Each structure stands twice: as structure tokens, then as C-alpha cells.
Image (cartoon, rainbow, N blue to C red; front, top):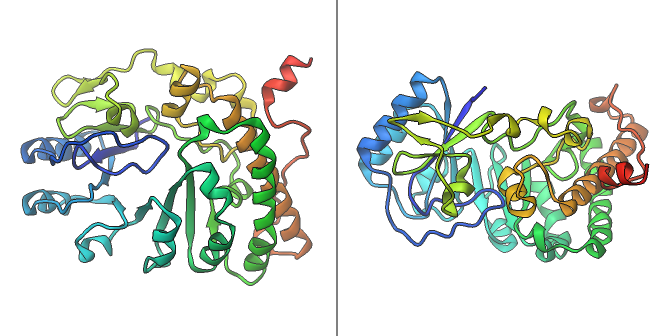
Length: 318
């Protein structure tokens, strides 16, 4: 069942996930279209997530935005400080910008980073984990990561476990999507585009997610005609035979990335599986540290031992 309506407020609204923003347009959502979007959200009982561009919104658009309950997803350099201070999610494109930003404890920080830059961010990461309440890392070039680099990823995650364990033992339960999320999840918590969320573009057309809109893929309807998703069931995890029995619950399973890498929206690429299981195993080691410290937050939680990083290997080797 759809729960969220993602609304880019301009053709060049920022990316907060794996997809690039390839638009060079400098246009905002038409005011009449925005009114129709808000009306649609109310009729369908969908909670709006507004995605901001880097340019200041016109006053009339901002007034409509503020007239409805919503979540603000904003770039760190949005020019109006008073609006930026209201953001629930702030997106960064470099570790330096994130490090230098005046952070608040009640926001989610999203850092879009290349794999190489992530592995070189250890010192900054350790400092940031002291200062943040939630950090989401989005790797923007997963499709170019090689299997030989997976070992380095495992080492990087393992190097952060002692610090996270120390912070949790001190009562600082910082949330870090690559390690801490899997500890508290009991089932899959994936992208869920087309299942729980849908995107409506500035011109009133529906897309699976902002990534499908940003790179110019086919729309799936309009505010006038409604939403029509071909083979809608394929987006449901129950129609992904391997994923539905996998316990890397924190895996993003980004449908845009899946489609790009495997041509199937419900099938992640091999590298995505390898990285997700490195995260899952790091979460297991982190959990064991917390249990040894008798941290109350983890009572009754367990993560099983596994001997694979890609579930498909188990099937192939049978």
C-alpha cells in the first residue's frame, strides 16, 4: 500500500539516493500543478516528502509547501537558513561539507559518496559519529566496485565497530545505516519504491522513484489519469525469491540501481549483495560487542552466523 508521495520541487531537485541528477533545467514546479499534487496527497492519504533544489523557492511555492504536513529533504547549501533549519533530512555531496556543517542532533544526514572516498573517510567518519544522531551513507558508484574491493569494505566497516560499541556503552545510540540498522530490524526494510512510495514530477507525471524521473525513464501515469504500473507485483519482495528469504534486512534494494545493473527491478546485482552482507556481518560483530558489554538495548536480538556473502552462491553450489 502506498504511504508516501515524493515530490521534487524542481527539475534539478537534489538526489538523495544512488541516482544522479542529470537535469540542467532551472525550473520550479508550476504553482497550479503543486496545488494538484497536494490535493492528490490528501485524497490518497499520502504523506509528502518534498525534495528541494539548491535554488531558493519562489514565495508562492514555499507558501503551498508550508500549508501541508511534510518532510523536507534539502541540500546542505540551500540558501535560506530559516528553511534549512526546518529540514528533517539534509543531503551532502562531500565529506568536507558534512564535516564543516553546523549539525543539529535531530536530523538525518545523507552523504552521497563514491566507494573510494568512503574507504578514505575513516578519520572524518569517527569524528562525525560523535556528533550525529543519524548518518546514512549512499554509495553512488556501486556498479563500478570490483569483487576484489569487497575485502577492503569489510575491513573499513570492522574498523568502526569499536567506536560504535564504545558510544553505545556510553548511552550514545547513534544510528549509522551501514552497521546499526540491521541490529534493530526484524524484516526487510528496503527502498520500497512503487510499493510504499511513488514520485510525482514537477510537470505532474508519476514515476517509480525520483531516479526514474531524473534520468528520463517512462512515466507511469499522471495526476489527471492516475497511476498505472506495469507488472506491479514485480516490485513486491514476495516476488523476489532470493531476497524474500535473505536476512540482510538493511539492504537498500534500490529499484533504480537494480534496473540499471540487472534490468530487473526486484533483483540486485552481485556487488550489491556482497556489500550488503558485509554490512550484515559487521552488524553481527557489533551486536556481539554490545552483548559482551551488557548493553540493554540488544536484549533478545540475535544475528545468525553465515558462510556466504552472496545468497546465489548457495544455490549455485548445491
